[in-house]
Image (cartoon, rainbow, N blue to C red; front, side, top):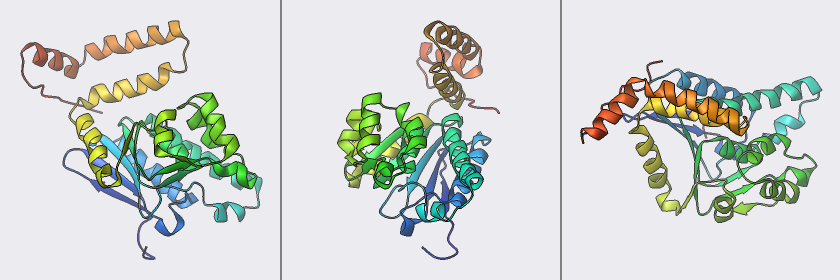
Length: 264
């Protein structure tokens, strides 16, 4: 990596698919404070761009993301500064969940600690059969407490604690069995598998997708009665929108729908 090369790369496609690539390959894409800031800023910009329908999050070099930059963390002497770092990272993770567009993790190598947290925070995840996942903080006396928030909301508590307490890496097939990732692909077919998801989603109504994503995560925090009440109201409003009416008319008329998509 050149000295002047960006630590976060962005590539936009004509289909409305944007790829963000963590670009600190010599550091295994460790999340420095600068990379956290840049990623959060880019996600904020993407959230306001109605032309973008899907985001792919990838890593350059041999790793997807090895977690926080431990050397940078070790140099922080003030508790307040340490809290600021974790608060900034948590904000970025929450933005992944709150982004109107679905986010797909493309995991080709290791995804450990906060890197595993990113995978758990994305809406979908596709991994190479050579990928590895883990929360090894316990091995260095630093329990992966913030990664546990995302992981514990993605996979079963027993599987979460197995990863957190043992600190051992799991392979892609185990991550799939745990529910951390959606699909395992051979390394040579990883891009195809990721783009298959991305292009399928990009072909749907971005209006419906953004409403549905937000509602899905919101209802998880509600009890059953509240969840159904909330979801019913969201669906009733969704039904009144252009794309829902267009989609139903197209289905009944046996034609392809003409989506208007997000308008704000």
